[in-house]
Image (cartoon, rainbow, N blue to C red; front, side, top):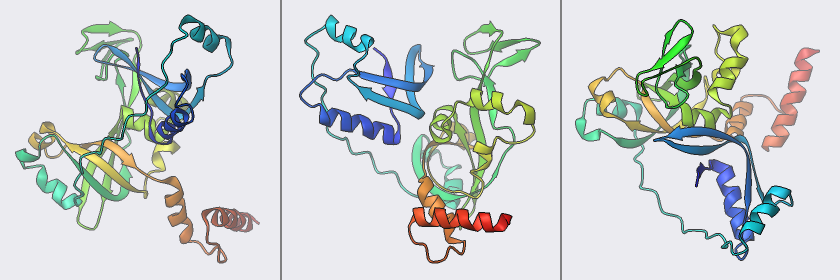
Length: 273
C-alpha cells in the first residue's frame, strides 16, 4: 500500500471519478507524481502535471482486474470539517513569537510579497528531508548517518510578506513548494545552472503577489524570533491575481478575465509597434 496526496483540483477530479463510478470498482492510473519518503514509507504527491485516469483499457489494468474479480466499489467518505484557523495580522503574528502558549498553532495571514531571498533551496539527503554536509564530491547526512555521492536540491524559499500592520518572514518548504510552483526543486535547480546568481523565474514571479497563507508557529520560532515561519499551505488563485493585475491597465471596457487577457495582449502588441 502506498499513500497518495492529491492537491487542489486534482483531488476534486478524484471525487468526480468516484461519484461517476459509485457502483463499480475503480482502478486508478496516476501519472507525473512526486515521490518522497516519510518515516521510512514511500509517499506520492500530485504535481501540476498529474493526470488521473479511471479503468483504462490497457494491459496493466486488465491484468490487475484479472487477479481479483471481487474488487470493491470505492467509498466517498463524508467531508470532515477542518478546525477553524484564526486569521490574524502580521503584527499579531510577530507578537505571538514571544508567547509560548502559541507553540505548534496554525494561523491564517495575508499580505503582499515584497522580496525573496536569493538562496531559495538547499542540498538535501536523497532519503530524508535533512540538509547534507558537502565534503569534496560526497555528501553526509547527519540524520541518516550515511554518505552519498548524490544530493537533491529541496525548496526553502525565504520571503517577506507585508500587510497594513507590519512585515514578517516566511519559508516555503519542499512539499508546499512542489504543489505551488508545480515543479520539483531539483529540476528547477538543474535548469537554472547557467544563471545561478538569479532566482528562477518561477520563484521570482511571486514578488508583488498577494498571498493568503496558512502558517505554523513552532517552538523553534518562539525560541528564535528572527527565524522564518514555515508555510503550511498557500491559498492563491492565479486567475484572481491576473484579474487584479489587469485592472491596472486601460483595457477598453473589458470585464471578464478572458476579455481582459485578449485586450492586454492587444496593448502589448501596440507597445511593440
